Image (tube, rainbow, N blue to C red; front, side, top):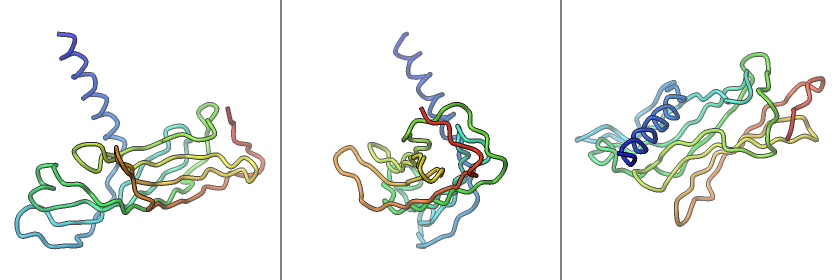
Length: 157
């Protein structure tokens, strides 16, 4: 009974985390006769602790039969661009470095992650996207920054 309750809570948590992404669009890169085509997907994520900042993540999605049933492992290629899209509102103090988004890139053990870092000296928020795996990740990465106005210091823990 406790195990099924725990599993249900975990699935609900995963569903809520996945709901944060909003698909903006996609382009096909390889035609697949059976199953969906390989593609590049662009998704938007709002920073959960910094109102007014949205990150746009582009990443490869594997198609074909494996992609259709969720067994494919997506490539490690990803790019991120974060922008100020409204007034900046900090929802409490920010840690120096924190993972803000994560999305599964294979059925087991591989994720695409976005980490926010605070550059207090330049009053900027730096966002890094990379892919990791249980055993070995990829050095492929992308970085972007959002400048915060000088009269609005970033609250750091």
